[in-house]
Image 1: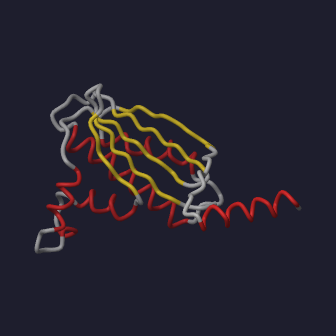
Image 2: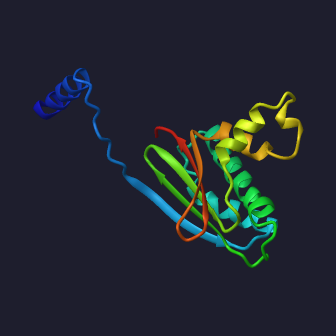
Length: 167
């Protein structure tokens, strides 16, 4: 009881001083999958992803994560790897912890500026969902809490998508 009172007092005290507590992340599960550049591999990707569907996940949260993964993978095949052989691998990492689910999709295509593309799409006068090009990026942006696309030193690109939650 004394320890609980002290912890409560400490949190109150530090928050009044504007000090944010560091939250430790307790990893629950992590996995990696590598598939070829083929849209037919999407079924394998989604089946592999099912291992992360915890009973405590709300259905809408799970649907959002699945959709973001499917859109990210499809974009890697159709756009990043459009000029590459089907044998070119696409790597997917998923990590789930007590606060978020993170998906990383690694491609070997030419890099592009995700933020500029999203800004360009948002400036269009017509509904961007009525067109084919860019619709997946809009879905990813709306369905995730964080998204970025970066070039790595090993000449790959990483699409990182994170969905926050509390279990």
